[in-house]
Image (tube, rainbow, N blue to C red; front, side, top):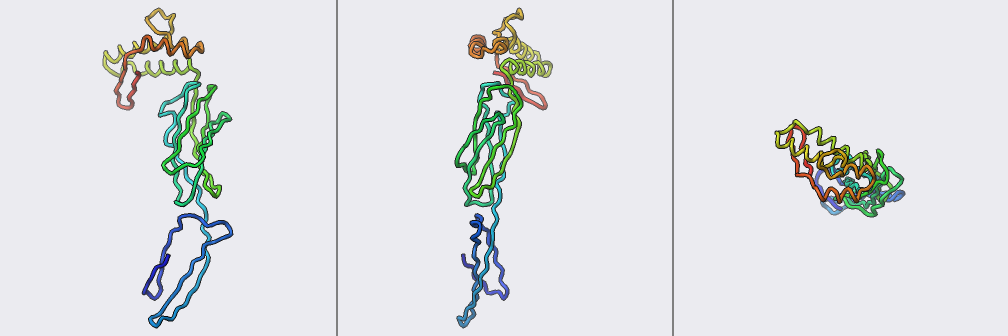
Length: 228
């Protein structure tokens, strides 16, 4: 790059798009030529340090408060790096001893999914490493419940909405709660929660399909729940 100036004491600025190779600094040269064509030159070297990528997790579990065992948990993340010529690889470690290596990733973002085999609270980490081994990370927590506990938690969420809407909304909520209840409760239910607590996820899904509860929507000042 060359910039010309007629000032007596010129100053120029330049932004480097990537760090130099360690041990091989950039060489910056300057030249001054007068009106008669006489010229003088000088040079110096500049070391430009690498900057670690900055990672942000933008979504996990699609906004849900928990995930059942065996169900894919999605994670998305983005990163920034002032070195626009840098290249990057990504990985996600799930906190249960497993990891997803994503290979080359772009600045538009990275994504991965994982199904947890056991209930628990897991610390999930998204990492982006540049070609100079500068690594940026971000972490989040994922709560995983057994299928039965997940069904009970959903039932609890529905019960928490009772009384927050009109009578018709409450009636639909009670129907949905009954549909998730035990087969032995004496009401017309599909027993999905009981089947889940027994570990039979396939039968629970089949039972839910036979008697799917009505769509329920509750509008409140601080939340909106939809159960379909």
